[in-house]
Image (cartoon, rainbow, N blue to C red; front, side):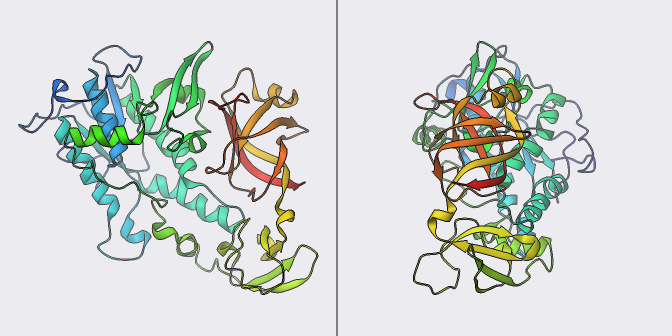
Length: 418
């Protein structure tokens, strides 16, 4: 098991602190240039302005994928002192209960290979315990409560954009760059978060909880690039990950088997219960609330004359509530753990009923609505939407055409039907 790096060139990681402690990082040690290493003049890629002095150290979060690898290349190519950092977050073999399976280990190897190719230092930090406590445990508990979690957001806000930023500062970084498809734009009141130019790759939904202080330090070099250009740059540089496919599943949930991961983290979590119609009729039985999500239609095991959907999950009473499609329609969304990147304060904006556009699913376009506050924050949708699930994110965007600016968001605590 790779432990927290104390000082590690791209050939490997050293020994250091317990993963629960703040990593103790020794003096910066530059990687030795190999005959294969690239120099800035070799790179066929656009130069980027990160808003820090020329030659300043920029820490690059390297996941081992093509996006973060090209980010590292662009940072170096643009004349900055690039330093790669990779987090070991989980043991893939444990995640799928199969020995010898370790794609997480392969990602670390790929990140090191890219760092060697670019001739930049590379640190590997063991964050397995932090990731387990901050992300995986929350994932299991959220499912058990009858809500639908988004672990990628929790990972960004609790690990990558919190703990890793501290490490980046300890390494002397003037900024930290990531491979996310989103833009940071300097506005009249400070940096603003904006959607990626490539709408098909935009990751703003998963970054809504980024704080102003974090945004001040973060940089997103890929925000103006289409994915095809990123692949082209990687291939032109002969990066070892140029043809590596994008990951599709949540990293610790291979093949999308959420219930299996919850059962492993919370033994005995699968308890049978009743499937009830919204009118109170008993429709059947189920083998565990964790197998269902709001909006689900298939796999209910019910034979009726009308299509039925999961409308609500009553985890406390082990009930799955089903009903017709119209029972899914929601107009009011109650929020918790809100964040705000818009002008003024969030509470003032909510009390004033500021208009905005919102996303309640990552794959849906922003829809018109307004903020509200009646003792707790809420969003009122202009047109009712279906399948709005507690535990998911409600992300705020500017109301004008294009909905370019990200204004923040919150976690969906409860919903009210139309």
